[in-house]
Length: 140
Image 1 (cartoon, rainbow, N blue to C red):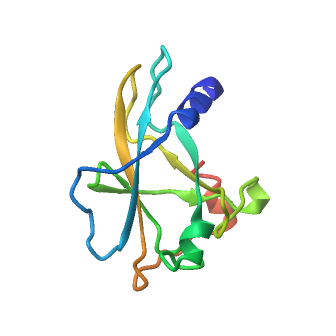
Image 2 (image 1 turned 30 degrees about the vertical axis):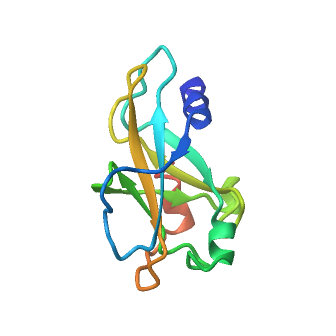
C-alpha cells in the first residue's frame, strides 16, 4: 500500500477547473486531479498526503493565518474531512510553503482513473475547529 500512496503523491497535478464553484463565498479555489498510474487498484479510504503552499496564500491575504477557512471538496460537490499535519506528526502545520494536507480517497481508483478535488479558501467568515491532536491520527 505504501507503493500506491507514493505513486499518487507524484501524480497530483494542479489544474484549473471547469466545474462550477461549490460555494461562491470562498474567493479562492485551487483544483487538482488524482490519477492512479499504478497497475493495481487503490481502495476507497486510502490516505493521501499532499502539499500546498499556504504561506504564500496567507502572505497575499487570500487565506486566514490559521488556515481555518480551508475546505477540501471532492468533484466540487462533497466536502471532505482532512487534517493539516502538525509538526508533532511530521508535518509543517499551517502557514508553510509545504503544508501537509491529509485526506482519504472517496472511491476506489483502478489504473488510469482520476477525479478532481478542490481546495477552497479566502472566506474570512468561515472557520473550522480542528480536532485535538489525538483525533487527527484517525484521519490519516
